[in-house]
Length: 633
Image 1: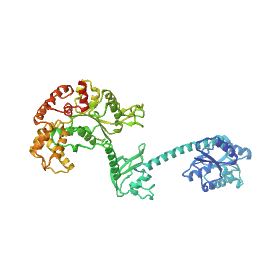
Image 2: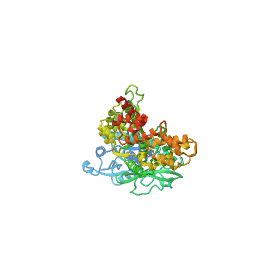
Image 3: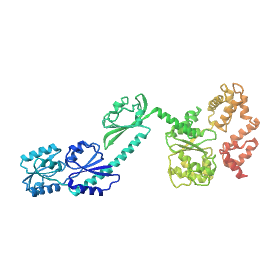
Image 4: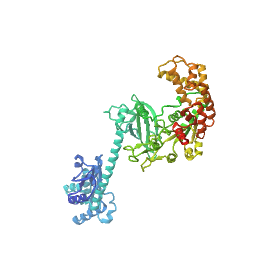
């Protein structure tokens, strides 16, 4: 930052140099010069950020230099009194002409009584004013002159006796201090302007700012490209409606309101427009517009979706993917959609294979979080000792074997999105307490870290077991259940919506025909009858498997009743045993649960049911079943 101090008269040059040497300003460089009058100020090229001057030199610089800050060396009434007294003593003056700039003689009317001499004040702006003032003063009987350096120089040339108005030490120090303050303020303004420039030129959005008349004051590089404006076209200082005539963007009105999400065709391209009025108190002083190219938005969204999909963090399904027209299913979908419009936690209850995650994804995709991550985790599939680090993450060195650089947890990954906790009933008790705290405080702490990380995650939990029974048995925290079970959604089993069986089967048959390059006609009524009469303990998941098996094993263009019966009832088991199993299943399904484990094992042993089927009937994972069997052995 450069400051030039224009010395008013040579006698105080040494004094000013001393004051400047004492002054301290970070990044400030002082230099001095001496100028008489105004002509030189207009011709000189100033390589300075701030100029300090006095009298008509100050006025000339202030009026002609638009990009330089000009500081005035103040002259006080006391300085003028001193000059008048010198004039009286030295020249025995009878009447004095005081000739100086208006800024110097702003209040000398009351001095006559103090100095006890007659004087006349002449306010001047340039050399021509001085000559006119001197001529007028002579005709008015003045015999001496008090003025600035330029005024005295011209007066002497015209034969006048004169005394210079000198500047006091305090005025010089004050001017230097003011110049340093101005330098500091200018440096801050430059920093702000540079910061604003960097922001404007590095944002991906096109940004245009206008004043209260719609004249463009800012136009970043992205705006040229987004709005199809030639780079060499000058836009600053022009009306926005002239530069962007298709937009019809600006109207002079004090009621200009914020608006966003408006699609406009501007210069042949579709852009998403937003504007925000700039108000000082209640007065609008400008508007800031942002423009986004629609094609770029779609391209970016596609990239994000692909990246999330690659990482498995995207919800693939929506309510349109749910097959069926039964009244119970329609009611379930209606309830799910209502839940999707708010951010409260949801507990989804349903037998295995009913499509709990399908509903969870559909809820996410219908919510205002649909553009954010959908993170699904099966709480029963992850070992207990790893589940905490998966959910909350860890820092480097948190425990033996911790990865270098640490790991981000699923809660952080799901920030602003949805975290789907499947088989929530399998979470260990010690981890339930930590999960409860997260749901209460909306913040997490990584393993081995002291820092708290705030999160915004919507929790959708799912279970195929009765959590209230687990609460009674002491295996699930009641307060955690209350936090999860704010919105409750029960998914009907396939047995409860048998009228949907035909359409679901037709859908999967068609899908597997495409996969295996087969042509199979629509299912006949007798095949549909067989499928509809089956109990489907594995629900939709089991039906999907059966349909795939039917497509793979069928050699004809249609599926027969016999093939369907064989695949449904004769898989490594006589039909009679399968019928017995179905009867047992019907009885046991009325009272499922871990407390019936031993009786159920004994009862089903006669029907040669494998452990996977038993786990399905109990509504637990195979891992849990294995653990329970081991505990009883």
